[in-house]
Image 1 (spheres, rainbow, N blue to C red):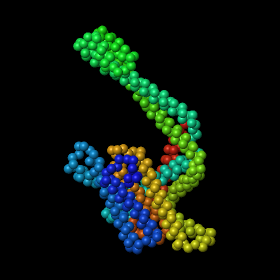
Image 2: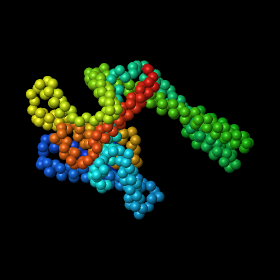
Image 3: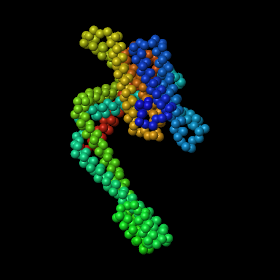
Image 4: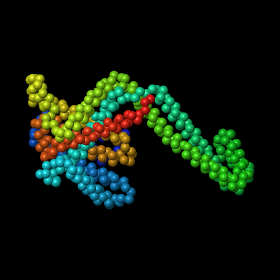
Length: 459
């Protein structure tokens, strides 16, 4: 927890504890899947631990985290009294439960035989949210990975273009500094003119001239200018002094109006310079052996993306759901068509263990990377604790949904306990819902990246 958010202000011990508990319980679900494949513990013991883990993670996701999020928000509102915090927190949690429960109404996620207060009711609704998050992240990742890795999408950037933009930025900054210096001098002269006007009835000419020198620590040229202005002000009528003050105000307003757009322009040029340098670094990286490796990997991701989009489209159109896990299907093809002599039970167990391990590691790593990027974009010193709580909520739902979808990647003898623990869930719905959300996310990501790529000018 501290390593994940080490650069941010997440100092509340309770926030760190809740995030760590959610992460630990989520990883426990994956451990139980591995125990099921390897045959660790007795079946009755594994079933008991499945129940304990699911009840615990659901209690944290549905009761603990929403209550603490509501309490944290209400405690920061100044006009909410302390004796109102608990009743308002409970009321906010009831509102959350209402909308959470209504989440499952439009979807055929559960068999009608289950009661209201059952584990199946809770998991079915958590699964809808979690599967949606998984599908959106997967769809974007399937499109963004080849876009990031393939050298064909890299813009050509010359060092001379970066140098020109840097010089333009420097000239803009120098103009801003020059105008701000003039503005400071005008404000200083305005303040001094107001001072001399207030004291012109209490001192003579010599005192005025001496005051102009004593109050100025600038160069001789500036002191002469101030002495001259003091003489003019001393021998001028009051109306002349008022007009002079009005002229100062107008000049200050003009300079302020000129500085604001220049500062906006400097920010725009700075972002352009940063983007050009990133593009140049990406171009240089693509020429290294590691960059060429990722370029080849990008073609693989491109093929996978196209394949997954086609398969998801077919599944949605024909209402199709895979009935056979990829491990069993691969072994069956090897035995039937290639006439290999294989111990199906042995290889099914070990390949399933390897496949589940890869899925677990990549799922956890991918989610943590996405959470860190998201946290980096929106976090601040005031909102960091609240955002970590919300990310913990999303993370827990994501991992519970991973168990639902991972069931299809396991042979029938290993997925039976998951089916038994989760009860009468409509597992086919979650796979169809994943395909639909994946397809929408991938198509939207393609359109977004295409527009972003078209708007990037050739350098």
